[in-house]
Amino acid sequence: MMILLPLFGTVALVQPSSDPAREPTELMRAVPRDAVAAYFVDLSHGKPIRSTDAQPAWQTAAALADTAHSFGLLSALDDCTRAWVESLTALSTLLKYPHAVILLDAKAVPRPDEGHELDSLAAAVVIDVSLGGPGPFEHRIQHLLNLYANQENSSLTTTTGGGVTVTSVRHSGLRDWVRFTWGALGDRYVVTVGENAFEKIRATLASPESSLIGDPWFPSAYKSASGDSSLFVLHARFDRIRRVGDGEFSVKVDRVLRSLPFEGADRGIWTVARVGRAFRIGQFLHRGSRDHFSEIADTRFLKGLDGVIPEPAGGFAVFDGSHRALLEGLSAAYLAARSPVRRTSARQYWMGMEERTGVKIDNDIISRLGRRWIIHDHPPNVLGLPLIWTFLFQIDGDPEPIRNSVDRLFTGWQAQLVEVESTTRLNRDPDGLWYLSFGVNGPGLLVTDRWVVVSFSPEAVRENARRLSAVPQDLQTQSESKPDS
Image 1: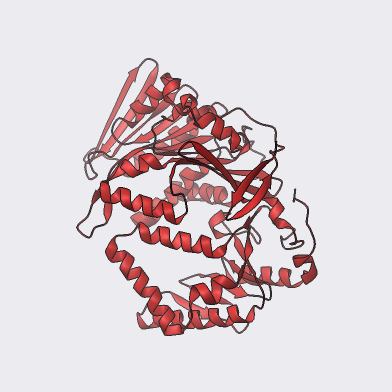
Image 2: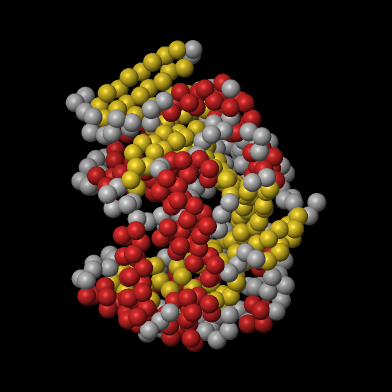
């Protein structure tokens, strides 16, 4: 059955997914119904990772980091850098397995500057190890214990009961609630932080009605949002997030929800599915007694954009919606989450930049963009991370006003960075390409005749600009493309 739905003020027609449906993930049974938020990842769609499968570049980088550590080559790194390296290697192991990351509870307390700070947290990672066993995770945890735990500052305890061995560690230099616990519960390997977090997951697994499986709303909403054919699913309880802090924190949460806009929603599900090279992103919100589904990215938004997606691209997503509404919403959400002092400071900075350059960002740049924008992964970056893919923003009409406004705005920003003696520099090449430089060059931005191109390096921006210039304009504005597969 086809469903009519609102999308950024338009009406979209959605066809049910043609992918074979899978049963809702068993990982749901580990997530308590009252958890604040949880996301599920299954990049393999339940298929075991074979040693012959091609791996992302960041997994290769993680393997190299492990090798470097075994030779003692990382000992000279500062603590922050080592923490990033260890996080990368842990992520490379985790993403090979279906898993859930769960925020069980948190508490935020007010600061003197009217902001809030984290006072306690309980969270868990639950990994389905039925296909590969817990060995890699036990190895990774032992590696971290060897690096960071010692008899003077750390307390390690192990208990066994009911066929389950559970290990916990505390560090005297950390807050009392920072207690890491891990162990295997059947085919699930569980790692938690926070008091009683492991016990909460174990009790939930023993009582399905207390999990998301037993939730009156979640299972059917999950299927309606095509969660059973998605690589990534996020579930958030806004009603629980409001209760993380005091009354002022709840007001701050409501301001953020209005900005996004999720006003009136008490919970939601977001899904990312893949069809061929394309990513489909959906949103399913529950407001009062009604549910609302909308598409955020879909292949049908490619209509009239033949040739824009590079043939070598391995993945892409096409979005349709108001750039102004999107950017205003994100900006308002960011400001709403800040303390009054920081909110005022941020506003004054950008108002000062607009006054200095004579450029009104909203009127002179954002309002001149078209509705559609694209993310794709060509050329590939070293780590293969989505956040440093290429972004293409469609221009509505004459590109020259946008180009002039960007040049004036960035010239002012360039001068301001010099004035404050920042180590970051903003550079402009003769072809009009702007890029940041802080030891490495990038990201960069270039206004072409039909697109604003943003990518992780000047070379990546230029390669995309060259490809776009070779696509006839009539193919980008008149033809109707077919969904890419």
